[in-house]
Amino acid sequence: MPMPKWWGHVNKRLFNPRALAGGKWPVLVHVGRASGTTYRTPLDAHPVAGGYLFILVYGSRSDWVRNVLAAGDARLMIEGREVRLAAPRLVGEEEAFLALPAEVPRPPKLLRITEFLRMDLSR
Image 1 (cartoon, helix red, strand yellow):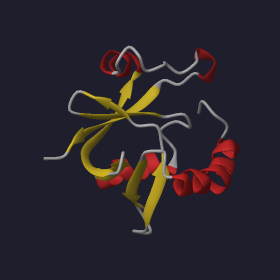
Image 2 (cartoon, rainbow, N blue to C red):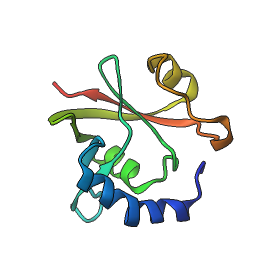
Image 3 (cartoon, rainbow, N blue to C red):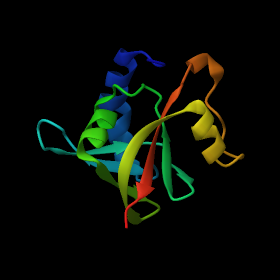
Image 4 (cartoon, helix red, strand yellow):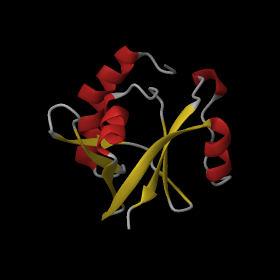
């Protein structure tokens, strides 16, 4: 896991509520795989051809990633509109970096991020 798991817990409890309240971050709306609860997670969402790419700062074992993979879909609230996403899949660095526009900064190598989540626009 690139970032320590404890930092993810701090982020979830302290920073995420502030990001949600501020309304400036893209928010992924997804359903819990066991609870069925609807969750709202602020994330960096990068538009790519036919969908969006998410950089998995905490790795693919993050609850939100596992929820989205289990559900097979999610909604993204971005720039005041809702985008429906489907077909979530983990992709590696090579595929992610080919899909990302050149102006999107790549994660620092120090973080050792090798997994990304790609989702397609739902039709």
